[in-house]
Length: 180
Length: 275
Image (cartoon, rainbow over all chains, first blue to last red):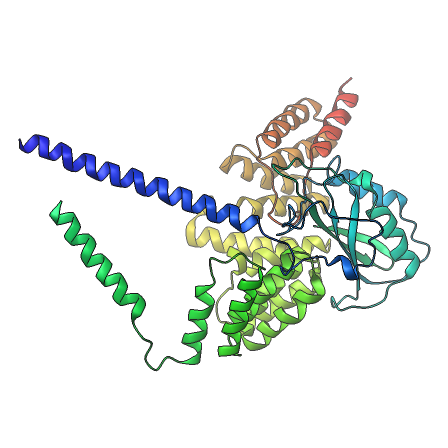
C-alpha cells in the first residue's frame, strides 16, 4: 500500500514536471515568435523609405522585422564569403589620390527578390561624427557596395527582407578595414 | 497531495506579498535600477525597450549603466554616429566602469586601435586593479590592439605580461588560447618563426583542434621547407575549420581571421613545392 502511494506521488511529480516544461516551452516559443513577428518601424535601425539616400523603385516585401535586423546578416550574406567581397572592393576601388580619413557607413535592405534599397549613407570623420568625404570616393564605394551580385539571398521560413550594414574605415583615402 | 498544495499556497502568498510591496524611501538610483531591470526581457532596440531605458535615465541622470544600455542597439545595428555620443556620456558619468569598455568597442567595432589603447591606458590609473571589459584583461586587449597597428614589439610585450600574470595566478593551462595564438602571430609577423612556433605549439598542446594554430604552424614549416609536416598540418587545419574550431567573434570579424580559402591556398602552395 505504501509502495503504491509512493508510485502515485512520483507519478504526480513527473506529470507536474512534464506539464511545466511543455507550458514553459510553449510560452517561450510564442514569446520568441511574437518578438520577431513585429513591424520593423519604430525599432532602432529601421530604414524609413520616406527619407532614404538611395531608394529608387524599391519596395520591401514585408514591413516585418528583416532577418539580421539585430546586428546584420554578416557573415552569411557575403556571396562567396567575406574574402571575396574584400577582394572585389580592393581591386575595383580606385584611390585617385584621395586623402580622406574617417568612416563610410552604408545601411540597407535586400528584399526577398534580391533587390537592394532603402539605403542610408553616413559619411563620418575619425571621431565617428557626421562629416563630408570626397564625393568621388563615396560614389565609387556606393556603386561597388550596392551591387546585387555581392549578396546572397538567404532562405527564410516566411517572406522576409534582409538587413545589412557595411562600415569602411578610410585612412588617407585607402580602405583599410571593412566591417562587420 | 495536501502537503504539496500547502507548499504551493505558501509560495503563492509569499510571491503576492513580494510583488505588492510598496517601495519605501527609495533613492532615485534604486528606482532607476528597478526601471532598467524591469525592461531586461524586452527586445533590445525595440520602442518599448528604449522607452524603459529612457525612463530609468530620467529617474537618475547619472546612471551610467542605463546610458550605456541606451547605446547598445545603435552599436549592434551599425550606426556609429548615434552610438558614440551616448556611450561618451556613459564614460563621462562613470569613467572607471565604462572607459575600458569603450576601448573594447573601439577595438572591435571600429578598429580604431589607437583610441582603444588610449582608453585601456586610461583604465590603468582610473582603477587600482586590472580591468576586464568583456571578460578579458586590458593587457589582453592591448596585445590585440597593438597587433592591429602592426606594432609587434608592444603587442608581444603585452602578451608576455598577460600570460605571465595568468600563469602565476592560475597556471599556464588556464591562459586563454587566443593569447598564445596572437603572440605567435605577432612573432611570425615580426620574422621570429621559432618563437612563433613555441606559441602555436602551446595552443595545440592545450586544445587539440585549432585551425588557426595549425594553419600558422603549417605556414612557418612551409617557409622553412618542411613540406611533409606542413601538408599534414594544413590538412588537419582544414578538418578543424570544417568542424568549427577556428578563431572568430560574434557581431564582427576577428583580427587576422582565417577563411577556407586561406587554408586551401596554403595547401595548394605546399603541394606545388612538394611536387
